[in-house]
Image (cartoon, rainbow, N blue to C red; front, side, top):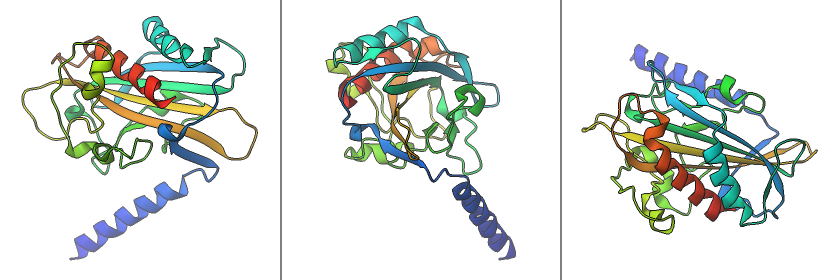
Length: 239
């Protein structure tokens, strides 16, 4: 009994500590609530894999092919990519290819976060993670989005963007033991409008690809085609 009480107290302290670290001037909303006028934007696009300990590590911060996909998708909607200087919006895209069953998921066995040092200025524990979802930063009108830990799928990887809607897995693969081994892409998109007010608004969306071919350590190239399709679909439907 004493062990249970101590464990409960420890969990409560951890939860309180997490709440205390949250920025009261940060407002995180789903990208489906964006609804802003078009304009220019800057783009931060980074790719990640899991290291030997199951932590996400940055493997690329400049990918011309993926940048072109983003620029083309948003140009059709009136958005202009700026390579320097201030812009109306700051767009971040963080792409992971991994076997999430091998991820180091933190104290609560559910967190798959971006490394703070890879994100740099503006990093927030309320924004920069792929798991868990729990309805935050997602299209919550889709019931499959509410808990990706409990939903899995196997999807084909061919076809056009229009045909890929079923390939975008809002739930993603469940965590835990599964066979056979597979890789999967995770996408985090965050948009921050420029502004001088005290409240920083960030619009976030998270999604997962269907299963990519199995490969040792799941290099980004394994999931590249699926990540491109999901990223373009997200931009096409959320903006």
